[in-house]
Image 1 (cartoon, helix red, strand yellow):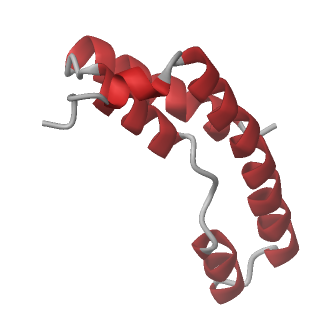
Image 2 (cartoon, one colour):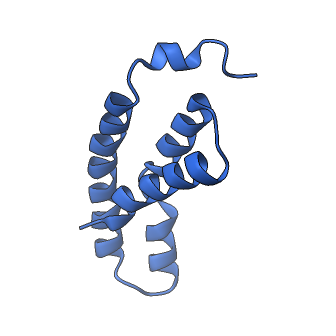
Image 3 (cartoon, one colour):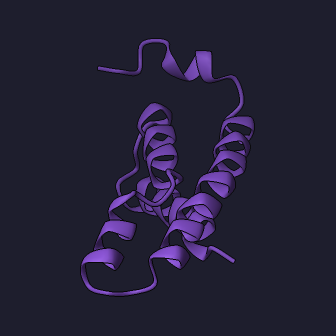
Length: 90
C-alpha cells in the first residue's frame, strides 16, 4: 500500500490549516499538490543505481491510480470549488 498517497495530503492539509492558517484556496492547492503521484525520476534513479526498475515502474503506476482516487476525494470534500476560487487569489 502506498502510504505516501494518503498521508502526504493529510499532513500537508494539517500543516497548512493549523500552522500556516492558509485560506481555503491555498489550502486546496497545497492538498492537491501533495496528492500528486510519484514522479518518473524514481525509476530513472533505480536504473542509474542498479536497483529494481520493474518495481519502481509498478509503484509509479500504482501511485498514479491511487492519486486519481485521492484527488477526487479531496475535490469532493472541498465542496464547491468555484466558491473557493472567487476572489481568493489575491
